[in-house]
Amino acid sequence: MTDFFSGIAPVKYEGADSTNPLAFRHYNPDEVVMGKRMEDHLRFAIAYWHSFAWEGGDPFGGQTFVRPWHPQDQMATAKVKADAAFEMFDILGQPYFCWHDADIRPEGDSFGESLKNFEEIIDYFEEKMSTRKVKLLWGTANMFSHRRWMSGASTNPDPEVFAYSAATVKTCMDATKKLGGENYVLWGGREGYETLLNTDMGRELDHMGRFLNMVVDYKHKIGFEGQILVEPKPQEPSKHQYDFDAATCYGFLQKYGLENEVKLNLEQGHAILAGHSFEHEIATAAALGVLGSIDMNRNDYQSGWDTDQFPNNVPEVALAYYHILKDGGFTQGGTNFDAKLRRQSLDADDLIAAHVGGMDICARGLKAAAAMIEDGGLEDAIKDRYAGWDTPEAQAMLGSDLATIFDKVAGEGINPAPKSGRQEMLENYVNRFV
Ligand code: XUL
Ligand code: CO
Image (cartoon, rainbow, N blue to C red; front, top):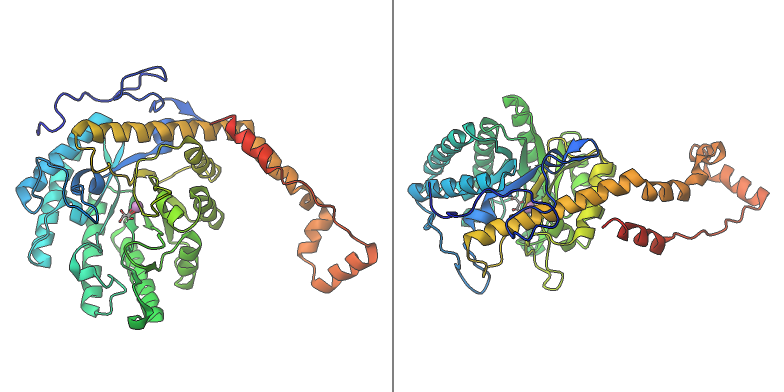
């Protein structure tokens, strides 16, 4: 037991009129939306790294948070950190959490020592999970912070770093399986480059493709039933990251024969960095059959950085869940808050309020998305827009050829009449629900 969250009671649903800052006003886990409990739709997870490992630094200044689990380079404090984390899970009651190896254990002086620390903490987690409902949404390896990864992990020019990466991912997959994790994520923050002057891009892509095939082989070898997910991001920390966006990742998966084995974990802020909206990335992955899970957050639209703020825009979130629901909703994936406090938000209740707000925004978005689906207005508008394709002649044209189509257009004097795309009407329609 720590006293970090002392005085903060488990958060309850109190309804939209509640003025209690630490109550849910919209997230009601048992409320049924489109035939499913809200908790089972949203499948919220808390990210260990932002809530417990990050100390409040930015490029211009260091630590602002002072926590009972600091300094983080000792096993004793790693356990205090785990105690506090599970106390927060008890307060928020969210069904899942996520970690990187480096968030939860101190780095050792050797691979073996780091592994020993990691396994001890995984056992500690297992014990805590045995008396609680909270589960692991995904585990992952941090192969971007320590200086050994500065030139990449599986794409590193040094084969010893490739080997270290393979050994690291093996241990993280073993631990994810041991804790019953439902997914395993790979985000390659340093799988990219700073300058082409020192980079053999083709070779690096081949190594990354081979590495991901090894991950998939190992998944089958150990009988891990979770999804393997790649998380796209265009840049930061790399100048150019190979997993730029959903479409780029799909091309990569196809080239290396992995499009039926690997899906995507899409993040709101990463979509923005790539010049897309979140719903664009979700709809792209859904259309390609690789929508796996999401990291929910928001970026500051002014700074252009990956600011990992908690979401607070209902219309944006509603459109994201609209496309998730249209794809059939999450199966093994979920909504992971890859979001952190602002560095001036020092207190324990700031951490709780941030998650309460994020969960409420997502709940409002989900309800709005479900209402739009049940109403069917957007679906009808799209059906109507493509109705011309429902005729047998239009369908036959898809099996035809240019010369035959030419004869028809020239012979019959076809002259298409443009039709309104009705964008403002549809934007007004969405506004009725959010
Ligand atoms: C970094 C990021 C990571 C991944 C997991 O921008 O999103 O936290 O989600 O490595
Ligand atoms: Co993320």
